[in-house]
Image 1 (cartoon, rainbow, N blue to C red):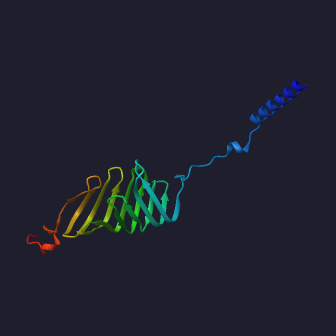
Image 2: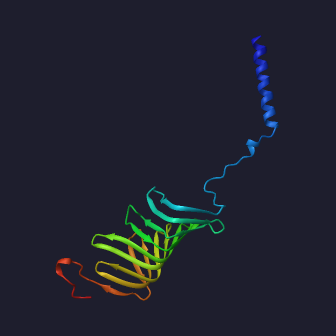
Image 3: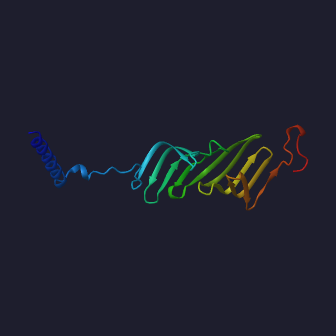
Length: 194
């Protein structure tokens, strides 16, 4: 009797399995898209996002009242963005009227009244420009069009500025003008050679 019961249960399971395979089910047709699905246009309010490098260190922190994603160009347009570049390192605080993130190229472009601030040991460095391009892959920042830089002991104006984040160097190009205090020691008073 036990063998007949086991055989009957096995046969019942086999029939259920075959019916399940042959009869279509609506559950098999459902798909869940990966989020965010970049095939769609969308707008986010009170946007905040963190971007990390391959070592897991915070590289960008972006905040904005609105972010609008355009699926056809794979770019995101940002209104009045605040961008912290390397907040745990040399920390550059950038603000602008508008911004654009080009997702496939890891580039952020800030336009309109761009102001970049960096705290130094002897004060603050302020860079102003109409445009600023930050390339995460190359680890460079390029400011173009009427770039002004002020920091303790220096005021410079140029058409183009390039910052290399790895070497922490600033390079000035095209019509560089300015004043540099050659002796920045506060106890000596004003420098004699400007």
